[in-house]
Length: 86
Image (cartoon, rainbow, N blue to C red; front, side, top):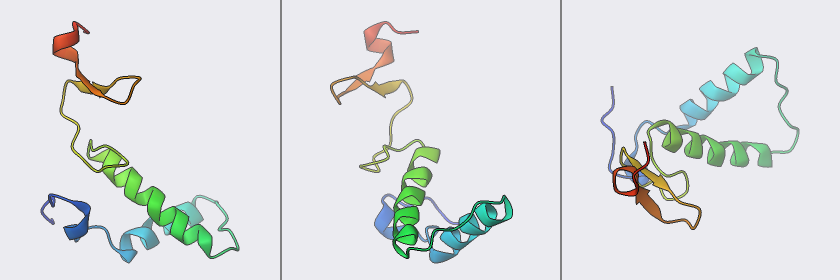
């Protein structure tokens, strides 16, 4: 199993093979591929967002979101322990 990299630039797990595997699963589930080649570029970006979210990182920045922290409505991070949230 590949080590988790510090950032997306060095992530050996994020390959064309990963995109192919995900698209194959969608095909097998009955989803139809779009005819425009731009669909692949869009799918690649969304797959990057999915992998970041799956690992608990911020989707846009890739930064790790610490346990107990969440984004407030104004885009800043708050700590649930400090705010009295349960």
